[in-house]
Image (cartoon, rainbow, N blue to C red):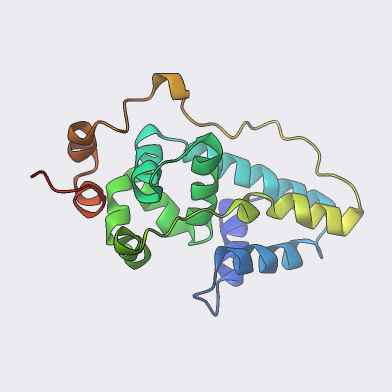
Amino acid sequence: MRTDDFWAVIDRSTADRPGSPAVVAERAVDELSKRDPQEIVAWGRHLDKVMAASGTEDLWAAAYLINGGASEDGFDSFRGWLIAHGREVVARSVREPDALAEMPAVRSAAASGAVFEAEEVLSIAASAYRQATGDELPPSEVARTRPDPAELWDFDDEEEMGKRLPRLSALFLEPPE
């Protein structure tokens, strides 16, 4: 499956949006479940590649800051939320995690405390495959990677957070007294 084909499913699922990531996932599952099972598998493999490419330390730090913490599963779910927003949001977030400070939803979350997670986006292929075949999605050869938590810099270090993610830090960290 080509990258454009993968993202086209997400784009069509967000066509009359804004909708929630749950709606995006539901629409994507509906579309994919009508396809050949091998296409569903290929779509899932591409999702795994997107997850691998987005498993960066500073993006995890951004998720930690925005969501008020982010476990390994929480970071995965945060990336599901990003994927539901499309290719450009994911690409820019991987290149420049601090750019998330420009998203209106993220800016609002600084005041509201909203948490951004979308585990359902991560199970689109598995759900579509199950609907189409009645079977479980075959295991992937591509690992959904993320940095080793033992090797991460200290996300509670506000000075380091301010250096790496200055715009997000300005939104989410208390100003010094």
